[in-house]
Length: 593
Image (tube, rainbow, N blue to C red):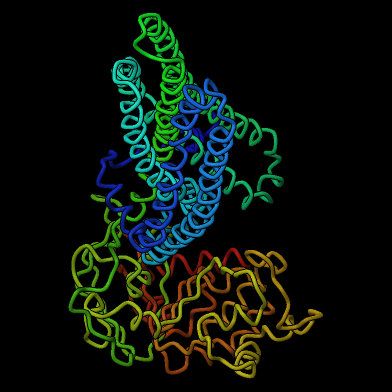
């Protein structure tokens, strides 16, 4: 039976939208209040200038043309041109200001999101596909930026424009103006009906796009595995299904959005038709002139224009509400592993490590470690062995405080690590993982990553110690070789050697090696052993290794299983006990033989 793909499932929004999100968005807008007020003022002046157009036209129809007053007509035309010219110029200035503001807000939001992502614990990244995180930082921020700038200004401008239109219109004729206003209740009922449907539809679009982006990102990263197992057709089918779902919900959302403009336009047409009919009746009774009918009709058209604009803004607003929700949901994600309020700087680490009755679980009710206690003295090398999933990596992750312990304490030099700042703790630790991550850039940049002020001589020295200098020298550009994304130009073993050099260069007080030589061939590993011994000298070290031959000389070996340390001693002591470690070691030696 084929495994159900998790990306086919909808991502559930964890918090319902409320208008406090808009108030929070105001924090980003407030920084650029002066520019936005200036843009608002320019637009307001331009809008008012344009409103004199129908009055000028009325005067031309009722006075200048009937009286054949050419001089007045020319003057009215010139004034009309000036009004529209001012409107156009001010609109251009306003547009340039708002483009600048919009880009600044995008920058601010992205900067805050990225800073928050840097603080989120490992658990957050364990639980979420990276593509879903990426789409929030890039796509969603782009989508909401215009809403937070032009959208909000346009709402205020269109409302003010609407008020002035009503004032100008009533100044021309009250009765015909009331005919125009009769369409407003119909519009209100229509907008109330469509509002909730739109928001839910566009939230579905957000869900499906997020799923699609996550699946795409994962398959780009795993392209080699896909080809190895000939999964191209199956993955293409899954991708097509996700695309089809995106298309379906998008069409549904757009169908609601596309009802807004025609709905408002139809109400506008009905109202203008009513103005003509009623106007002609009043004209026949001598109550209004042709110029008045023309002016009111013009104002009626202008009256519905800002309403149509507000409808479009409303469309955009509803479309982007789901994205704003996602952004704030990310920013609201709690930083569970953070500095305590009274956290102090970790003094220079000597290397004593103590676990006091530590209990830990990744999921509530499923303890990985139960009441674990042990002490490691400064400078000791400790190997952690045991079956997969027993908790070896969990122990070293807790020492680095990548997760908070559920119960108990982890002490370094007698100091509870939950009481010190994360930076002062981790900056004195070196952690070498099985999956050696290499960043885009040069080999030199990657080795210097943990010590930015390191000289090239120091980098070369560290590389020679861990046997990395030899293969680096074979590249045409040496340490300046660009290794591309995730170190695609390097073998897995070369990545591990570069990671070794990076770790050694940082000169840590406590060293953690988690399957650090798993991808290095036996010959290189033997050559590396001398460098490893140099790394371990004078440092407290924790080594997780499945090749037991590499950890025989450790000061202490801990066998981790059943949620705790079931055996502890030197290699010779544990073999003499003939317990868990003895069985594991003899089984491995038999396999080698």
